[in-house]
Image (cartoon, rainbow over all chains, first blue to last red; front, side, top):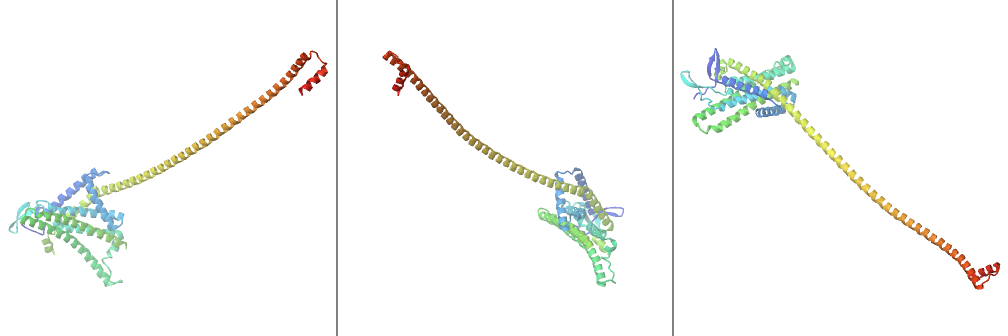
Amino acid sequence: MNISIAAEPIFHIGSFPVTNTILVTLVLSLIIIAASYILKNKISLVPRGFQNIVESVLEALLNLVDSVTQDHRQSKKFFPLVATIFIFVILTNWVEVVPGLGTIGIREELHGKEVLVPFIRSGAADLNLTLALAIVSVMAAQILGIAAIGFGKYAQKFFVSPLHKPYFVGTFVGILEIISEVAKLISFSFRLFGNIFAGEVLLTVMLFLVPYFVPLPFLFLELFVGFVQALVFAMLTLVFLKMAATEAAH
Amino acid sequence: MSELLNKLGIDYKLLIAQIINFLVLLFVLWKFAYGPILAILEKRQKKIEKGLADAEAAEKRLEESEKKQKEVLRKARTEAKEIVEKAYVQAEKTKSEIAEEAKAQAEKIIQSAKKEIETEKEKTIAEIKSEIGGLVVAATEKIVDEKIDGKKDKELIEKSLK
């Protein structure tokens, strides 16, 4: 059994390491895209089957966004990003309960030891993915702020001249604002990564110790954790977007 | 710093790949899923709202027409009752009138009959009177067998008739 914080590369294309997480993420994205394409062609006013499920999920999300923004037009603006984050994260999180996780793979020599490199590894159990999502989410909030009041004014939130009224206090607050943006990145990415990585390790260890029945409750637990983490990520993104939009208005 | 990132498995190439992957996913879902689904949700909501409003309006109209119908029925019933009552009264009136008329007619007939009888009686009496006078003259003539002169005769007759 080998536990590594970094995702393991399965093969390389040039200097680009194709890790198991990026493979899983790509496959998952393709599945989502294919499903949405099929859905788009079969959409009808009287919902049927798959459309029902998608509709109820999206409607619940839209109501959630509405309840935070209290403004339907704004909700519609935020909705695509929030919903995509939620759907993508919950599905990558749920990859970890797919059978074969951490067990099916290729044996490789690493640091003089032979270790198993699994094919399937939940996307969020790789900091690259969580950091990527965090960057998209935080950048979206910045772009929203800039779009609302213009770049110059928005920059004044972070860079305050020490020569004007609250003097160095203002400058210091500006620096704190920058730090808080970076902290958002870190908290976003490590929260999701930590939860999912821990879940994955837990499941792998459980499977090694007691292969039958005992891992079952943990599987359900991980399903729940995956849902909660996806919801938290999406909600935090939504809240930051809302904050950026309201701060800009003041 | 770079060693730390390395240990955590952060690789800028992978990072960029993941960001692009997510953005592509976002774009595709935006185009294929959110747009059409939200549009259709809104459309359906409007349709349902309209349907409900229509149903309510129809119900209201039905209620109104029912009320009107009831009103008309009630009116018709009272009118009919009135007509029947009137007819009854009229009939009663006509009945009594006819009876009265008949009575009057009968009275009149009786009256005229009585009058006729009276005149007939008088006429008969007068006739009888004159007849009797003649008869008495004849009888007296026969008895006396001779005619006293006319003047005396007449006097006599009148005297005896008194």
